[in-house]
Amino acid sequence: MSEIDILSFGETMAMFVAEHSGDLAQVEHFHKRIAGADSNVAIGLSRLGFKVAWLSRVGNDSLGRFVLDTLEAEGLDCRFVRRDPLHPTGFQLKSREETGDDPRVEYFRRGSAASHLSLDDLAPALLQARHLHATGIPPALSDSARELSGHLMQTLRASGRSVSFDPNLRPGLWASEALMIREINRLAALAHWVLPGLGEGRLLTGRDDPADIAAFYLDQGAEAVVIKLGAHGAYYRTHLDAGFVDGVPVSQVVDTVGAGDAFAVGLISALLESRSVIEAVQRANWVGSRAIQSRGDMEGLPRRHELPDQAPPLKTACAL
Image (tube, rainbow, N blue to C red; front, side):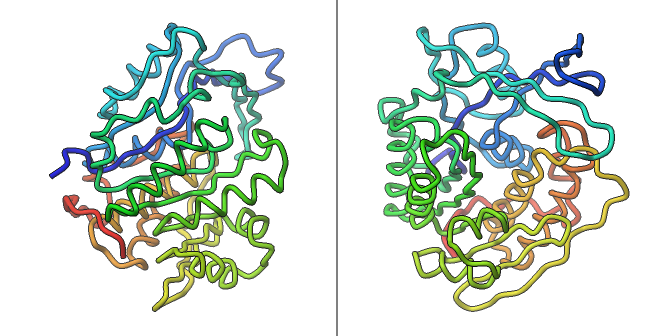
């Protein structure tokens, strides 16, 4: 039996967060953290007790060492991360907002080590993971990273592992919107669980209603589709059931970045514990509500004992 519960892959960047609000050009002091949607999910699942392997590349530089040190401190298995001597670790600048508005982010990732991810980075042991979580970010980084994404999703699904996919659209990284839509939908068809936001679903499918968006992906091969509706909660649909699950009210929104990743943590963890889809969406809404009450991309992700249900993780991962 595999020692890896979950495989996640992508780019983790260093992130410099402004210590006071205002124009980034005028900020003099920043706090160094890490950022990356894929690694946010990996960290959240690790905090809930799952054994999570992380596949990526970092530069052979101080920022790369910082990224790896941080991920390893969060319990991720980083044995499969390559230190690239030719390409740097990507980084970003993030503004501080005091009103709950989305922060401004400036990226410095073009040509980064992670953009050179390829099939050459794939170790056979990773294909034994019980579950794969993928997003639409690695496929946007480069042709080789896109090839890796498709290979992992197709191979693990064919071998009986479960696969989740969050489109996590980054239009600025794609050559065209048409290419993005075609490739993201191609990858979504390889997943058991598809997790788009409502705006993403509308763009990707050309359909407005959550039920119709979900039907599009069910027809493509998904077994469950969960559409994130922000403060309104989420809509879920399988071949047997469908419905809305209300969001969790919060007294103050501090930082919305990472909320979708937190939602994925809650949903995936519950489904891997053989909970029902509606129970998984309830947990996902709760974890997402935690995330937006903390400053930072992954600082609000809970530990196992903090979950409302507090159930221990079951060491199984299978499709619905």
